[in-house]
Image 1 (cartoon, rainbow, N blue to C red):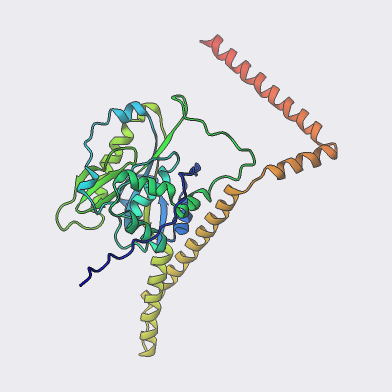
Image 2 (tube, one colour):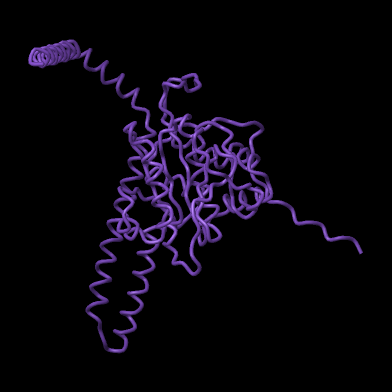
Length: 350
């Protein structure tokens, strides 16, 4: 008998050569819509203002954390923590970053492709299957060359009418980087595409509750932030969580079904009715927030240069531009004069 042929590998669209990734803003609204463009549903990004347990509790389940920080090569080179050989964790998706500006998307994918219970959708499901047996450097190359992933990422690029030549960052430039933290296989890992492999940052106890990994990762992130305090660097931390709209919608349907069942039996439940009204109010708030994020994303990508040029032309034609420029220059000179006088007064007192 003939051997059974192996099933065909999923086909993932790739470009012929690595194309560039644009810089995108670190914002939960941007990242949330980016996840939607990947085809992943039931997930959203939430910004964290602290690492307090209460802050995590209000989010519900957290699939992973995305940490943004200013990249300083000297501090990163001094990080001697050992990394795990990616080959020893074949089920963990880890990719090396091989192209500039892809770290945001790569950190998000690190959480989505390793979390349990997420509806990835066809694009990411096929990508995960396609890259399952690839080494970490080729996984990074696959991200960079995936047309669907790259187009979703670049859809948030600012619509700039001026084409600027991309220059390599110098030591004086501020360079920011994203890394991901997530639980996997009873351990907690830091996934940084610029390192050769995952960094194991802690172990979870047996039968630990789902949120226990946050207690493990909190001191790790705090210690990392403490390394930069002397440089007065700001950070950004976002959580990949279950969509509030999905969770609230399910609870709303459950409460409505229970109340209908009670009413059909001639009963009622005031507490359940009050909860339903609160859930519906929270759902409306979440819908309004999502719509506001979508509007803001449109503004981020809109090209305002033609509008500004047309406005300046109209002001010049109507004779208003020169007086406005003169008034602005007069205000600037006054502010500079006052600042110089204040500086001189301070120096004399010293």
